[in-house]
Length: 240
Image (cartoon, rainbow, N blue to C red; front, side, top):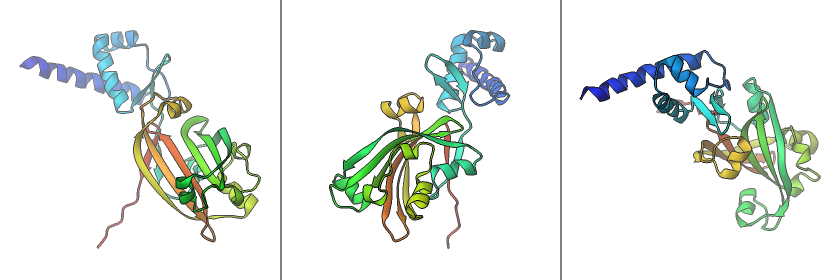
């Protein structure tokens, strides 16, 4: 009956030593090779691997296939608001960026037309973008905009630009209100490939519609954020 308890204590001590090691490292820094680290800590490689697996599951460490195990990037805390991605990243001291993956016009189907409050078949601009923070992938975004609201807008215009800023500066429309939902998700193979993470990795999925002055819907956007880089914050106020 004593062996399981001794093993548990051993694992706790190993986790504590790994935590000390990780605390002294920078986000994105690789762990030493498994063989070297096991020798340094005085444990079997299998014992070390189980401890590292636990820290990967807790998003303290991240594995990159063919590259090794790394200290997880610091998470960006997001307070729910109708801010653009660019403004949100700047407010946290990060440099926003984006890369357009594809774009084009297509007629709105029944569901998208209802979300954008336009007739079915209305031309809608769809832009798929990779959103970056300090040049590192943070989210993949699918933006849908009624074509007549933004004549001439292309996916190239949104390369490293904020849609909200372009909407105001070029078209004179300012975001007045919005509705956003957030839920936990697992990344699809397609999104994971773009974000540089493993398929099925934890993520946050945001869906948002925003209106401009005058009440017209200016966007429907679906964004998938890396769970290892993102955190949601919400202000709480007491109620009677």
